[in-house]
Image (tube, rainbow, N blue to C red; front, side, top):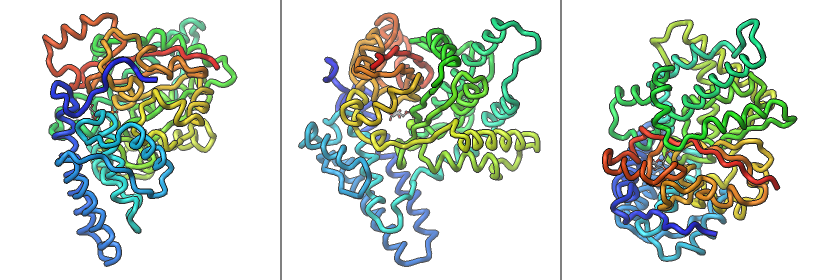
Length: 449
Ligand code: F6P
Ligand code: MG
């Protein structure tokens, strides 16, 4: 049940795997250690201090394993719902493999699992999030993008008076396409890549606005936006009208699309799928989600904001919390999302989750990591149709409609009209696969069970 193409591995020097395993991951881990030391220095209770020192020692061991390219050992049973899945996969496929010769996707996920283990087996620090400061900080420093969106969308979506049905539908189509792009490009600012970026560079990546969006649509290399709208516009009349978002980062741009889908009645219910613990630096946990909504309503993150700007955030936050109370927005965190399995194995390794997703009318997978997992992170030709590249997630009985919304930040690229597009970019713009400048919006029609 595997694709015919080889998966990327750390020792593939031509791939982003090499720089990630050799440089990026140790840098990220080093920063995590610094963060924990900062927390350690703020403690006063001896038991907690001693306990946290042990967490730091375990992170140091991980650093030694990672930089010395040690073999992957099983995960210690810390009571997490994913331990059995991790150890089964290691025993079955990766016995004797090390960080560099195991598939990149697996080895990278394994590193985050080991990082979690450094804390999960402690007494007082099980839920400590080494990336929390960074996630909160980035949001607080993104005030331009935050208020640009909040001021514009604080008033619920309404139609101009006296429009025909066709005109109303057209207005919704345009808004849907814009919000989809907001959602798409917001993701180029993934924290795991921002290690060396200046604030100016972050701002330019985050800038929204109509002109910018029109210009960026040409950078969507595999573009199923028209088909996506055809799918979404049919949902309103369905009794279910359920849309799922498999989340990646703790950005808040995606919630505007989710808000619009509820306001217009295009969807009646939206499920958000987050991570159970800190993952790939900026991925959303339950804690991040609650932090965001509560900061919007009660926080003081933006001292320079005007009263009107603050009010816009407050009102949006209240509206979104109300969706949660009404069961229109539901936040979930299945254990499978924090494993090393690709989604080619989702139906067999997490059948309950597959069944749950198969009841959705449309499942969005946001971001680069989810795209790598959908496509097995392997060297498929760029012209491989999306439905072929995602294997069982398109062909298994009960496979839902799937949309991958992804800015391209790693090697795997599929769903393009021809291989030549990728070949030309390889020549003309080396680095195009990791810059986040290009994207894909691909749809798979699924297979009703
Ligand atoms: O490929 C670069 C990378 O940082 C990977 O390490 C990771 O898979 C991914 O991008 C994270 O991006 P996203 O948050 O969009 O899933
Ligand atoms: Mg991420």
